[in-house]
Length: 423
Ligand SMILES: *Cc1c(COP(=O)(O)O)cnc(C)c1O
Image 1 (cartoon, rainbow, N blue to C red):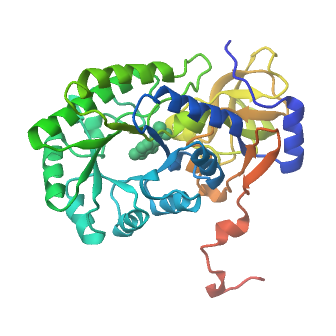
Image 2 (tube, rainbow, N blue to C red; image 1 turned 90 degrees about the horizontal axis):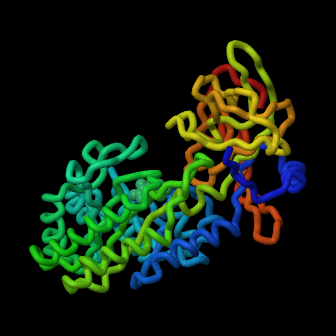
């Protein structure tokens, strides 16, 4: 049975728990830095390659700061995400704004920061012009629809996905914004999520390169930046293989040399908006076992819940579980591992074979570094956990405190209750 490792020993983890309590997400700074460097190296042949970290994956300024130090920009899709990018000192074209169904004030903020705006629809051209003005640099999100097979349960088939413009519309979009003053152009797509097959991204890059050639030939539009979006998967199951980033970089380079170079479009910048693959494997949700319950099935109740990690409940996603100190015990017990919500899908694992679990055991849920804490919600009055950072020197820093009941009540005004109870 394949294993997943931890960046701390049992004793180190017990010390962290002693100091901070459970539950918490903890992120491994060293591994995150090494990983983003690896992606950048795989694409170092690209003139001006840039990874724009998808802020929604881990919207914590300390994580964004670490990534910014490594040369990563930010991919934002809401006003608070733009403000987070601004707070860590990112500016101008270090930010891309890939939003959909966007309110005017968000476009205005993106314009104020000088971010690269990726429009999601042809009608958003006039909307942007009215709300914030057309910038010199502008990009469009392409949805290839039925021209592109594939998709998966997170994003769906391109044809069913709400994002982007059709091919026909794309050829209207560029002349339109050019006539409105735009001078520099980007082309974006994101049609897959959590995909582990690198050839899928090579095919997507190929499709985008061909499109750039066609835009040049038919409309004399020079695409300056091709944004391949995010969507690179991670091996949530210990048996799965991570995407070989070096292979991916080399295959995209081949397509570039075959399509972009002979058509005289070189240099075109290639950028990405990965979230999951950057931080996902380097975050861990640590919780303690509160209860064991044996009815028709055997349940292990944790002090963490769906509020801390939605993916299993929302998508039935697999997250590997380690019972700390029992790594080498036989996996001879079948459990549902649950949180405390009054929702039967508040389960981190269903019918999972694990070692015998006792009350008080520490449980580590793997691969929570992206779309983990960030997705949490407050349904059922559940409060989200704190976030910790494991520094390269082994120190631990709290980078977000846990929510409190006051946070939960912050939007309520109790003073107008008729039957006011004691303050
Ligand atoms: C969510 C999202 C990403 C990041 O996706 P990952 O699967 O985390 O790589 C990038 N771009 C856009 C537009 C997104 O919506």
